[in-house]
Structures are given as C-alpha cells and as structure tokens.
Length: 211
Image 1 (cartoon, rainbow, N blue to C red):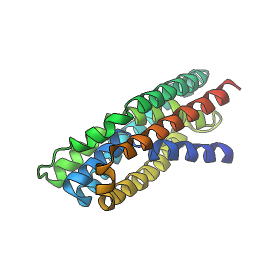
Image 2: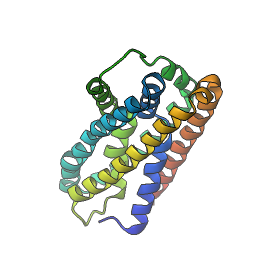
Image 3: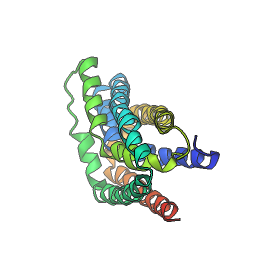
C-alpha cells in the first residue's frame, strides 16, 4: 500500500484537482443555476458514476500493464506531470469562457434520468479526470503492493472527495447565484488561480518523478 506520506500527498493532489472548476463543476453549477439544486445534485451523482469508469480502467487495464512492465511507471509519471501542466495552462487560457459556458446551459425542464445521463457523459468525457486516473494516480502506487487494490482504493477516495467537493459547489451555487452571474470576472479569477495551482502541482510531481 502507499506510504503515509504518499497517501497525504495523494489527498492534497486530489483536492487541488477537485476544487478547481473544470468541465464537471461547470456543468453541475450550470444545471443548478438553470434547473435548481436537485438537478445539480443529480448531475454530481451521474458525473461520479461516469468518472468511476476511469477508476476501473486504471485498476484493471493500466495497473495490469504496469505490473507486467514495472519500468513503465516512471514513464507514466513524467508524461502525466507534463500533461497536467498542459491542462493547467489550458485552464488559465480558457478561464474567461467559463461564465459563458454556465450561461449557455439549457434551461428547459428535464427528467432526473436525463440529468443523470448527461452528468454521466460529462464525467466520462472529462479530460482532467482521465489524466488524473491514468497518469497522475500511478505516481502514488507502491510498486511492491497489489496494483489493482491500490488503484481501486485511491480511486474510491478520489470519488468520495469529488462528490463532496462538487456537491459543495452545487449547494453554494444555489445560494450565490446572483453573485456569480452578475460579475463574470469573479469566476474568471477563480478558474485562473485554479489553473496556476494545477501547473504548480504538475511541477511538484515532475520534480518528484525525476528524483
């Protein structure tokens, strides 16, 4: 199993990824602003189920490959850190578009099943989560332990933190709707800072991988 230091680092890295408004958060907040809190929470659950597909892929696909070829884990670490840095830069560059994405959310009535399905699709297609599970999560795996169990355990922890984080955004959005929508620059600043945090995390992981 991962060491205590690696586990703590993983939780910190997960929280950084989760709290920064990405596709899942923007979609969930947009659903909340357009259709209300229940729709936002249904979106969060659907999104979590969608991202769980990546947990299973990492556990039973990527973990098996790394177990057969242990040296690949170092390559995955470096590639993951570099791509994470790219994702951070893209987050900063697209920060001004997040307000428009929320404003464009469909405001027509939708069933819970349809909202759940759309949340699932967004979670499955979320590049930030895909990168995290396939490139970043392996950096916290103990090569001497069972890869599959470690992937599933860390993935479950990430999912629980993700549901809590996204639900917090949804509940907050229900209360601060006017505060978010009336001043677009506020959301832009939040996303920009988040992008810089992703870049910082990528540099940190890259340095650790090189040591």
